[in-house]
Length: 379
Image 1 (cartoon, one colour):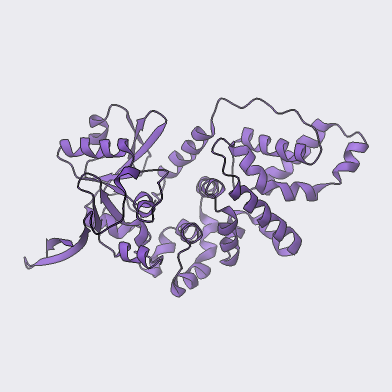
Image 2: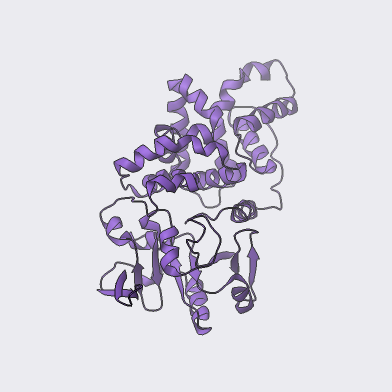
């Protein structure tokens, strides 16, 4: 086992991080995206440091193949853009770079400092960058060239112990960014790791802070939940910790009023989780969140027998569903698709509209870009 040192004010060496070598960790290098490795190699050729960071390292450690590979470096956004012709700078307050390889987008971010707290936008060092991240399992840095993990916060041990421990002090972690509460329960659901008692208590105490989070960020987190494969578990935990009322207040009200609705709603989400067809359209995934609500709106068989025009039924249902999903703000064409999908499934025959040119990937990218223009989120 190796260590990284720095010097203190008196010039004495201080241990900063543990370095796990290839023989000490379980990461399979074949699971690392070759284009992510290519980006890091290129940055180092230009004398910059660079690592894979966050959720990708967490997934690699538990044997999963990451969906996304985020990269962190000491190069500034303008410098990164000059190095990569296939790159674009995004964000206003928090500027980072998307490096594009075909259909893949790699997020390349500059180390951030603690100068303005854990949500500031000043550039800094890797030492500060590690202390800004939300939970220890997301604060690991992987060097795919030398196959080493750099651990400033004990994240490797916490992953081995299956624990979700915060990096940032509890008094500040959620007040500085309430969305971290959503991320905490998401990680618990996706990994099966436990949340410490004090973290649970702080989450319940600070739940109402989510009311001030922008609809674009709420939408981004809900899109991730819908696509996660763990929607039922995440929503169950969100209900337990009083978070879901700020994500889907209308659904939470129905759940509070009816045990049958809650059971059916979560069962529907579990069905979504088991149907992880990568080609499934986002609107179809969204339909699982709407199905039980639409069923409750009318006696649909009676409407059909009485000859109510199908277009009228669709327009009426769409307006109600639009209110039902607030503050979530999905692309209109995807919400329309979801409503049509549900109505068709319960016997209201509506012709499906052609899939719009704006893909789900672009839809998600738009929300991600909007999020990055505000406060940076950890992986």
